[in-house]
Length: 141
Image: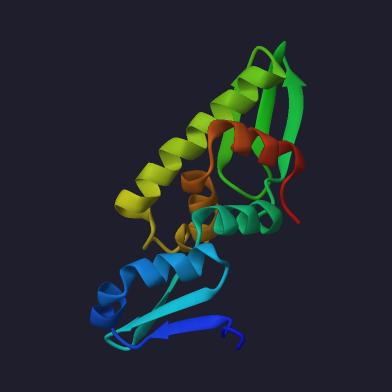
């Protein structure tokens, strides 16, 4: 007998009562949904989501030199950083993204010019510094 690819819980209560099964199904790669008040949420492994965003969110990092400094910017996004070296500029850019992710969650997520950054924020929150530096170099579309 084969297992269904999706495990659906029609209520929060049923998911809570079967929480180990929810996590087990998620760990095995199955889609797990939980319904509550007409909304459906998905439970999945964070690393699967992070890898998806790594591939689908483009960093669009551009580097330039100006007056002996290295400038790192994300084309089409409001992030510009600088440093004495490329590594310094990228480390500063990474710090700017971390600070932005905190601000986004605290107050910017409902602002019209920031709402579309949800995927970027999830990638930043789910990634280590090393993973984000790799994303700057190899990630995206």
